[in-house]
Image (cartoon, rainbow, N blue to C red; front, top):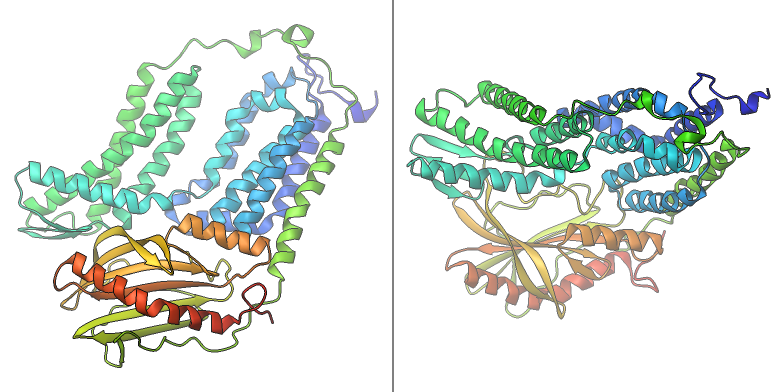
Length: 525
C-alpha cells in the first residue's frame, strides 16, 4: 500500500495517519508564525497567578482528544474549504488586535485561526466530534481583567448591604467604607476575578465530563459563573465581620487571603457535589457505535490534507506581513513641543498648584499639566499626547488611571459619566470624584484620537485601529480637566463645561501644532 494513503489499521475505522501528522504540523507552524502572540500568552501565565491555569489547558485538550480516539478512528477526515472563511475573519481580527495593541484580541483570534485551520484540514465530521476539546483552548487566553472594575463595585455593594442588614453602621465612599472598628477598601485582589476564572474553567470541564445534555451543560456552566460572584461577595462580608468582631486583630493580613481561598474551595466542593446529583452515568458506549459505512462514514478519499494545510498557511501569513508593513510606517514627528493653551474668557494661567493630584499616564510623548484661575476658582488641565502607540505605549490602557491602587494620598470616591459639549458635539465622558490632601475634586476625562473625541475605550481602540489600517492620522491624547467641589457637583460640572468651551479650541491648536497639519492631519518623519 502507498504510504501516503496509509490508514490507521486498528480494525475500527479509517482515520488517515497523515491527516494527524499534517494537523500537528499545522499547529506547530501557527505557533511559529504567530510566536510573539504565543509568547505574550505564556508570559502572562507565568507572571500572573490569576492565569497560571493556562499552562494546563493544552495538556487537558490533548487528553480530551485522546479520550475520543476510538470515535475519531471511525471517521473519515476530508478537507473542508468553507473553513477558509472563518480563518480569514480570525486573521483580520488578529491584525486589528495587533495594530491597536489589544493583546487579548490577538490571542483570541490566534485560537480562532488555529481551530478554523484544523477544520479546513480535518473536515466538519472530525472537528465536530472533538468540538468541546478544541473550544476549551479558548480558556487558555488570559481574559477577564476587564471585569475587575465591575466585580469590585459589586463586591462593595454586596458587602455594605450585608453589613447594614447585620445592624453595623457603615459609611461608604466609592470602594472605601468605614466601620466603628476600622477602615476597609475593595482592591483588585478583592474583586474575585481569580475565583471566577478558576470556577468557569473547572465548571466547563466538569459539565463536559458529567453531562450529555446540552441544557444541563449550559446550566452548570452558568452556575459556575454566577455562584463565585456571589460567593466572593459573601467572602468579603465574612472577612470584614471577622475583622470587626476581633477589633481588627484577625483577617487583616495574610490570613485574609487564606480564609478567602479556603472558603472558595468549600464553595467549589459544594457546587460540584450538587452538580454530581444530576450526573448522567448511563452514557451510550462509544465502542458500541456502528463502524464503517453503517456509521455514515467512508474511507478517506484521495484528497491531500497537506494541500489544504498549505493553502491555509499561505492565507494566515498575509496578516503578520500586513502588520509588519503597518508597523513600519514612517514615524510621526513632533514638529513642536506641546504647550498649554493661553488663557481666554477671563481664565488666566496660574503658576501655583491648587492641589497636588494629577492622573497617572504612562508612555506619553509629551504632556502638560497647567492650572488656570478666574474669580477665585481654579481649574487644571492635564494632557498626555501619544504620537505613536504599541504594547508599551498605549493611550487606552488599564494602567492609565486616576489614582493608583493603594495610593496613600488620594482615592476615587465616585465614578460615573457626564455629557459634555466638545467642539460642537455631545460626548459622554468619564467623571470621577477624588479626595485627598484636604481637597475634594471633580475631574472629567476623555480621549482625543486624531480630531475625534470619546471616553469609550472600545470606540477609541476601534478608531485607533482604523487610523492605522487606513494610514490616517494616528496621534492621540489623554485629557482631564479638574476643579474643586465647593458648592456641589452640578456647580462644579457647569464650571468645567464653561472652561472647556473657552479653552478647548486653544488646546486643539496646540495638539495639532505638535504633529503638523497636512492632507492626513499630520506629517511623517
